[in-house]
Amino acid sequence: MTQQIVPQPGILEIAPYKGGADTVEGVADVVKLSSNENPFGPSPAAVKAAQEACVTAHRYPPGDHIELRRAIADKFGLEADRIICGAGSDEIISFLCQTYAGPGDEVLYSEHGFAMYKISALAAGASPVAAPERNRTTDVDALLAAVTDRTRILFVADPNNPTGTMVGGQGLRRLAESLPAHVLLVIDGAYAEFVDGFDGGAALVDQFDNVVMTRTFSKLYGLGGLRVGWGYGPDHVIDALNRVRGPFNVSQVQIKAAVAALDDDDHTAFSLSENTRLRAWLAAELAKLGVPSDPSFGNFILARFADANEALACNAALQAAGLIVRAVAGYGLPECLRITIGDEAACQRVVAAVAAFKDGSA
Image (cartoon, rainbow, N blue to C red; front, side):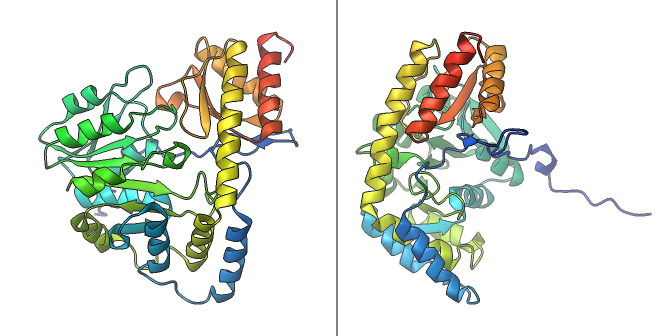
């Protein structure tokens, strides 16, 4: 009798993550606005550093990522020994669930939180739990009410994807102060660099023994294709995560590009300035067309339509015009479309296409 090979509990409950589309059948001139990428690309210095690093691609990278950890520490005023690097912040999220959650445990997050929280929880055998939001904004009271003796991790994305809204410093502090000691608060700061004066939760990490911060180079720094992320936490957490981390999980190409990206203040400042300007313009122009959005703190807006049918129809009209945005029904927001802030020409095309859709000429 042949014994059946079966995956661990939770694995088959995972709906595989789907990234933003990048092609439209039959349309050649396509603008991808579905993955919150930097429309201006990576720093030229990062590209050069990556190219130069390829010369030694036959060598294994340093397993401790010390050059990158020191660069991050210097940039953000952190302790290098309390930083862990990964293949995007997604990998850090996976490490956290693998290390601190398992069968019988719960992983908590907000209703419209990043899909990888649920996926990583299920992969670890834990039970994902979503707390309701209030007006598409993380509700601190709802999260605290959902904490149980089984809760092991609470993920809070600030700013949140796909809504673009924020809890902010006071809300995050209330969570940190109110959570029981057995719950690890993880502040996901993938979009933290887009918020002026926001430390992404670093001060809370320094103050509390059960707070961790995750960050990424995929958004502002334009290195999504290279997959570089990092986390900052208490010594005991970073030590535990490094025990499950693969020895060479970040390549020398990734390390060199990320270090160079951190050092290019001009490219970062330009990208931030253009995102802030065009985000405000796009939101205002769409609102004039009857498509409102909440104030966004990221590099995207969540455009709201009358209902799911209108959002679906507008998405089709945008695709026909060569504009790929992100439908977010899978996040419980079927009446919305998430639109990455592109360059000026892309933003103008979006407004023109939505206007044509609204007046029936699309």
